[in-house]
Length: 324
Image (cartoon, rainbow, N blue to C red; front, top):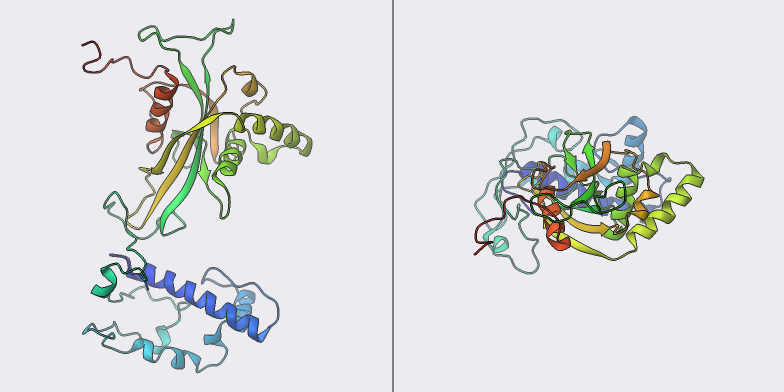
């Protein structure tokens, strides 16, 4: 079992839940009980509890808890002098609330050495955050997101590109949303669903957050999908791929993303995609890009990389050494 520094209880619960799910499912298949869904969370309603009892081997007979957790409670732990925290018989089940549960943390030196048969320690690759566990994130380790940076050139009423008066570089605009949860402006991205390709996430999240696609009528969705396909099938480039400096990060769970720039050179494609806030977005609009942008997490950095790639305006400060 993988143990994380500072989060033994959470990790122990995670490991046990995964092991029990596999074992229970095997028992269910062999015994072929009445059909019911295996619950993913320990908090169960009465009907769910009845279903769980048919699949969960520990609850099939009153004495099973004693049998299955007799040797698993012995001390010291094999190959060590480590004594377990004592667990009373009536506190063994995860279904019983025990706020004072404070198990001993232990991982053998041979496991910490990192042999190929052992999971690596799941720790934030950048460093400590001051918080263990998963916070608001669903997965231990990296939680994958995708951020579509949709851009166009800022133009005047005659359709001419507008250049910045100081740098002389053309001004880029990007589609930004104001997040409902924190009120900060951000790229309209989101989490990658299990089994979903990042390319699909990029298009789906942009449609949901910047175009309110989930609330469209069936005939509107058909036309919207055509325009989205046109935008997201054109030439694009990966702006950034990796760790995100996100406020939800913890020592044991963190955000990683793939930010991709989709640029509408003429502006014609986005003219047929009227912006409308939806899903997690409170507001959506085109925003002029510059160093003055204050965005969620480190989204400003992604935007800066886009301006560098497109040769667009970013900063009025030329920087040291530019005129030498």
